[in-house]
Length: 241
Length: 114
Ligand SMILES: Nc1nc2c(ncn2[C@@H]2O[C@H](COP(=O)(O)OP(=O)(O)O)[C@@H](O)[C@H]2O)c(=O)[nH]1
Ligand SMILES: [Mg+2]
Ligand SMILES: [Zn+2]
Image (cartoon, each protein chain N blue to C red):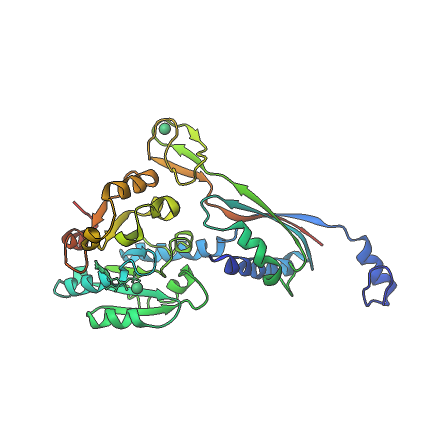
């Protein structure tokens, strides 16, 4: 063993070379997310070429993403091909959501992310032209329940939709500002529970407006059906008025 | 929340770079963490030694630089630096028509390599 540095080298020349090597600096104006951003851009180009609308639904676990989509699938089943929707649903484990959505008549594929807390663009890219057929007008992606990471991982979607259920309290938009800032539409879910909660719509909207001045805010209950017409209208036309 | 997978992504990408650029070891890695990135700096520090084990990053020094939010106002064209990252509106005219110019990033700036 060498007594200068403890290396195994008996080769003095090799060792000498190692000793005179000086550190150099490599500048990397490279995002850690760069790879994901590149694939997301490719996805977006593919979607645009097909004229496909893609919605990325993001919320905490249990906010009601799957139930909203079950009702949406039931509603759209009677509509013409123009309004056909397919769903990619993400969870770390299990395919319970896909089973629920299938039972509601949806065309759906479960994506399991295992240790990862969000979907990434490559998971979507693998399905383009396969599960996601080119003639599909609308693709809805139910992201893994999480308010942080999915906001940082672009999938190539046309719009991000943030869901917030009344039992979560009013202040989530201030605590998770990036998601609520980037959302093109904010859906307040489980409004049927308001009478049982100390939950203020006015306060909630104040928190939303601190981070997003313009996105339309819908109030829905997937359970009672209240407010769902506006959501269905958005699914069909992209408009909420 | 996804700190471990982000550090694992560096290990992969910097490992590929090591082959291309011809270095065997990283001595230091400098990273910018934006206030809106959703990345918890203490979480990165915590998992870094474990996730970088047996890679070119093993034993390297992690230097985290915190970046606050910078907004550009589309209405009054002023730049503002809100202290509270959850206040995404212009501090001058209170318009919400702002562009986030800084604060979302989580990126490796440079590496000292050998
Ligand atoms: N009362 C009420 N419960 C709801 C509503 N929407 C969803 N839920 C319930 O909330 C739970 C979680 O819903 P789920 O759709 O699985 O949420 P996800 O994790 O966001 O997909 C389920 O028990 C749903 O039945 C709603 O509008 N009102
Ligand atoms: Mg679900
Ligand atoms: Zn302004």
